[in-house]
Length: 106
Image 1: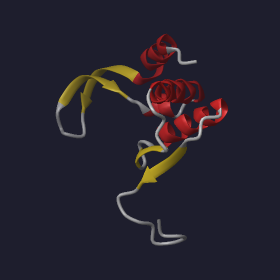
Image 2 (image 1 turned 90 degrees about the vertical axis):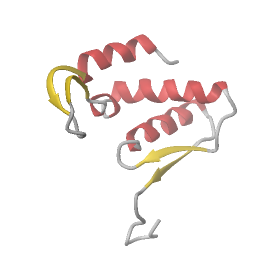
Image 3 (image 1 turned 45 degrees about the vertical axis):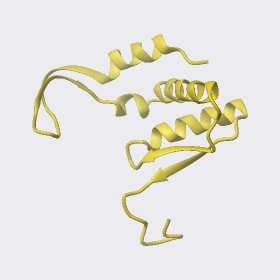
Image 4 (image 1 turned 135 degrees about the vertical axis):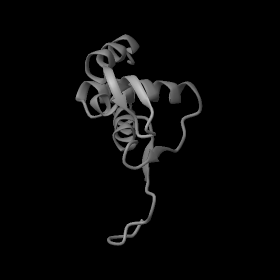
């Protein structure tokens, strides 16, 4: 079961930072949200997976979920894992910018 308040508390505790930051665009910011601190945390991954899966189950469950590698990889894994825990048939996919040059070259 998704616990939105627990996820918000975790974000405030581990990912939201205040100070002077330079963003990838070169712009300046007074706060920074480091999402990896949540997506790569066991409790955070569970909460994210549960939350996204709950949204998906409210509609017609898609065949697969995924996103651009590398940022979406832990989120995809979390959602697919929680689907497995609930017995929901869901596959994960990772989208690369370019095909691999080895293995099955997918």
